[in-house]
Length: 286
Image (cartoon, rainbow, N blue to C red; front, side, top):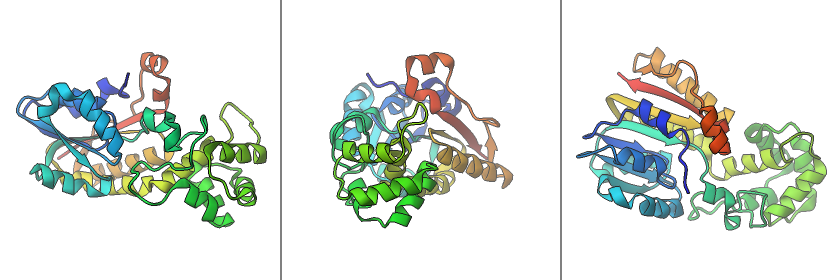
């Protein structure tokens, strides 16, 4: 069963109105999209995602309110096209949940996780060419170390990069995890490969560049009075959202709705442990 993260809080800050048109920039499996659509009457949700497989699941999960949803396959950098196709210039609210969906993480064939044997893939959009295997096997050692340090915030990046280069070719998730574990043994609760895998995923999908595109485009896609709500799961993302929203407020273009970051309740983290790292921030366009 799909459990959307911080659903109550997302709806509270988004405040969907029955006749409004809303953009769910990260439809995923359709949890937030469906919840918004079910509150609408004459309005609809533009449900965007870069993962075509997730969109197919979302269609099935939101069949009861399909008449209030317009699905669009694309990246954050293509959101203006999503609005154009839907025949809309501006929307009444934007939601983006930046988390990776459970099927992406748990499907061995997607290669996101070291918990099961799979190809080093990690593409959210499987129509793109670059995979994690390309980076792992062809990036030079210094660039690989910098990538792991900057995107994974992994202090042992040089040691890990050196071990990866020596172990090439590496084609599977378990092989890579084993190489990392030998180079940088476990020192705490986290598996030693966690931060390197995160760094590779961010790099493969250009996630920070795409987030910059979202934060740049969203204020221009949002109508006056529209709310922009973003849920992050990594400090790198949260810092970008925090600074972008603060700049919007300083420039007088928006009003901060969350002076302090909003976190999930104890009840939610107990029922849905992956939600514990979620952080929500929101602004209202002036």
